[in-house]
Length: 358
Image 1 (cartoon, rainbow, N blue to C red):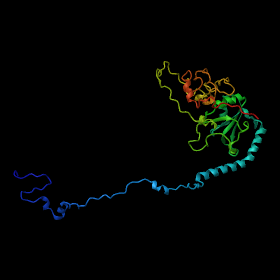
Image 2 (cartoon, helix red, strand yellow; image 1 turned 60 degrees about the horizontal axis):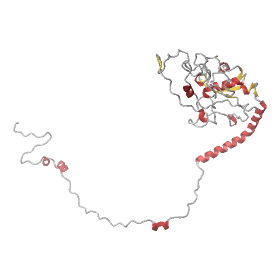
Image 3 (cartoon, rainbow, N blue to C red; image 1 turned 180 degrees about the vertical axis):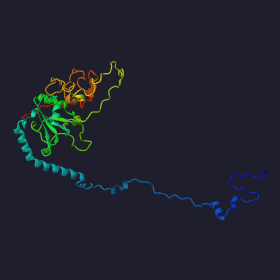
């Protein structure tokens, strides 16, 4: 064992006169170790002489100088669709002409009085929940002033609500106050929309069934339709879009707000929506409290309706419930934050414009 030569594992040892291990393999295995034959010799490729490069001057006579024939463009699917749409609009407009003339005649004959209601003191209330009754609507609308009459439109066959109503106030100033403050108010879980009664007070008004109407819920696709609560002004659609939300207020600590020196407000005092108007800018007191004063001009508005009014905000002396609405911190909210949370900074947004009388 001591004289035996150690070889690496997996290799065969051979003696001094023995042949390589490959030669001891079978022929069919030994053939795999035979080297390939040498490559065949090929002479190098001779480069051909190419003609010299020349310009295109001698080919100018071959160019075409005549103008191309006029392009014949046929109707495209888009143009066919637009033409059919315009033809349909023209045909429907011609069919509606007699009905529009009859509607104009009824408008002139009513003189602002319809079914015993003074249309100039009447407020239209839409997007009502079907569970809202006249009693519930009266309880909410009488905060702006004494209500003379209220009519909830129902289906004559089933008796169910159609989702809109008309509220007549005894005074036109009360109707204007409700016009500014009640727009976007939540009632039975839904945000309502209010507007003046236009059907018998505006000479140029036409309902939707006659090609008129207001609203931005049927403009086009989802990217164009308006889904926010409140009125929509087609002449100024950019003002009917929601503004970006303002940053949240500073966090409240045990010793008061960060960076402030006073204690936190008591529970229920100056927090939340501040009574009826809330952050839409209504009056800051609780239900049944005093409404904002009427010294903002005949058509201005005291911040009601979340930025619809054109006057200054109501004074901060409506009691301990966060004066002026908007959920302040005991002494009223910061004016800058309140304005940022409003729907528009324009002084003309929601301004009650005088309507021409018949």
